[in-house]
Length: 118
Image 1 (cartoon, helix red, strand yellow):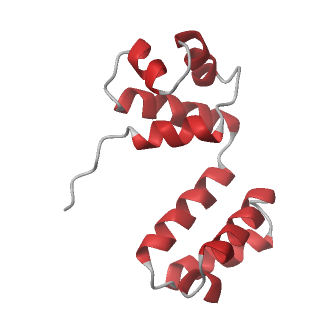
Image 2: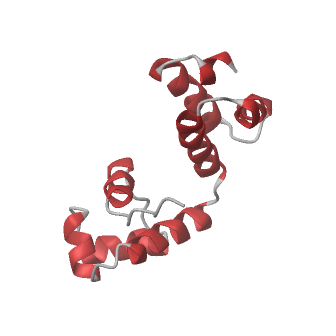
């Protein structure tokens, strides 16, 4: 809990690595419970997303990537260009034949439409 509320990037990375290494065991439950009562909404949002992604199946990851590509509103060729890849490689990401790199995920997230504040 202290690592989430008062920790810095090094502590948050350590929590994220532990969850990514084994997202279903007890080490992952402690951060999940701590996120329920943590005070920093920005940090908890990032850690929740990491926990969620670590627990996704390959099919769910593939579907999420394809959904994010569609949300950009770009033509497939333009989406591929902005992700620094080819249309055929983009297709392999969406079908699950190839796993996109972390860099590709980050580029895709950066191109997502901003959500309006309510």
